[in-house]
Image (cartoon, rainbow, N blue to C red):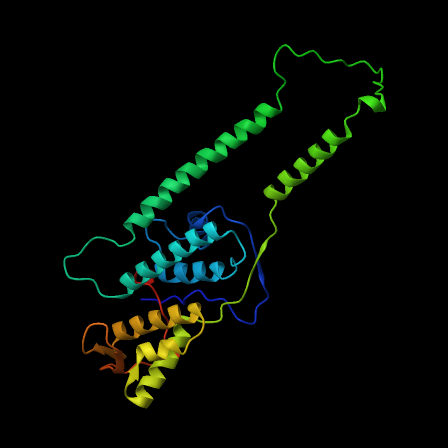
Length: 262
């Protein structure tokens, strides 16, 4: 049985140019095609990390679009948590089923839109019947009084605006600063050194949302592996982490999704 490494972005690497995407499903479909994985068996762990890496570069886009991307990122994180945690016996429903259905529908719509766009381009290049062309070489002279400079200026500005809308500037993807494996090693060492770590107090010391999300996923993975044990004495109270029953070689640890194990 082989265990593939989690897809990571090296912090020392150069910035990557990211094309613009029309929505979160468009970005998600791009990642699936880029990783050459089946849309019916999505490796949620690696796709979720890559989606969050792309999302970090989208801070200056339209807020409504950013909200859609953040909603998708939260959904992917929820699916990742469900895939990492053991499922009850007899529960055969795949948590990814709804996501797969939406991606398939989006892909069908995108393919149809591409076909319609090509048909529109072809039709624009065809002369409609009944139009006569004057092929004489007689030059047409225009009087400056007949030239509407205001109309020409507005037309030029309209063409330039449509060109800018069709060719948006590329987005720069910054290197990924926090990984689940990195936070697993930090938490495992801290819990085994102190014996008891308050999780909520630990999270409040982190100022960046990206790091907080990564720490939460690392805690879930450590609890699944038995490296730490999480306990809460009453609802909404502090969650304490203490050493688990399993000894983990954190230096050789590789975080994977269940669907990536072959």
